[in-house]
Image 1 (spheres, rainbow, N blue to C red):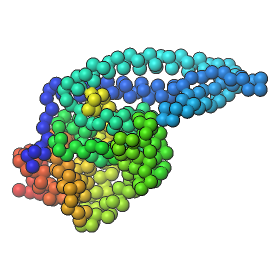
Image 2: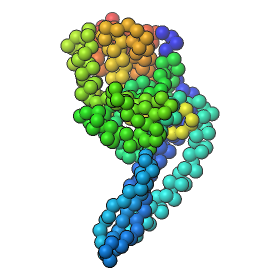
Image 3: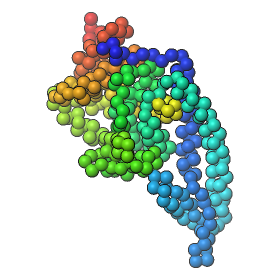
Image 4: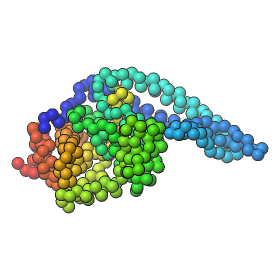
Length: 339
């Protein structure tokens, strides 16, 4: 499987990713803060009394909305003055940092780092802007491979980078509960997103799909693996408890974007299980097997955290597979299985 071996980024690409991470940290903080000061405040007279009103336009629908903050008083006057002053300051700083964005995008394109689809980056930025990334939604499927590339400073084979959809894992109990938060964010990224009737999926007019998963649906999928042992099922369940990984990377259009997703060890083992224990042998199983191998090798060669002993013991075939042709990986596997 030499064609699936990860390849290290060069010095210029690694340096640019560091610049992107520094930029994203400031940009995410400021745009999240800006969202809290969206719209404007003004006075409205109702039956002879003045009330402080905050009003704004919902970007996903274009509709104007407002709320009352109370009758005019020294307190509400101070509230309005503080809001107006802070909003001006934030808008100024955001405008300044956006001036730094253009050269960053230009360099990102030139270095050919980013392969993430721009619509996926738009969705992820909206989730970050509204503080939904990580605690509420994290990247779950094949798009996570872009996150692993940036985290490890190495490229995966283009042949296994699937396009056209984004899988998200939600902490909500049900998909309908999750979509109440997710759909407005999707429509801020692209107003054409609509829910499909036949599953927890949203699709835009160009056919880009966002698939929603919950911890419950993930666990049910594990339980449905036809050929999995109790030990393997237990290990797969435990993967949900691994700490998510996060970093900033570059989309195909050169723009920075933050990503938070499933630990790459969890990704590789889950894909391996789907490919080998689901009783299927079609194209999807072969793609899953290739993704499992490639990300597994990425972990072995460039990852910050190695596979746990119990992971490799439950999936010895996977452990042997990712050992191919790498002396350091051989040492790692033999540590657990012996010579």
